[in-house]
Image (cartoon, rainbow, N blue to C red):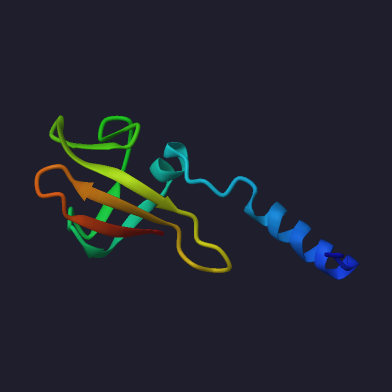
Length: 97
């Protein structure tokens, strides 16, 4: 299969656009997160080193939930974190703001 120059340019752009498309804990801590749906820990979440360690969320020094997925929004979509309650196993979505 031969690739045309135009296709190579598009593929190169998409590859470059996705480089670094991960949500680090540093980025998660620098922004606030608005409730979307599912498991509800509050209308807005803010994280720091006391309440987010690795992917575990603490409330009053007790493990409460875990970030199970970090979704990097492409082409104008919000970045999202998906959390899971350690008590009920219910999941919820929060959007970066």
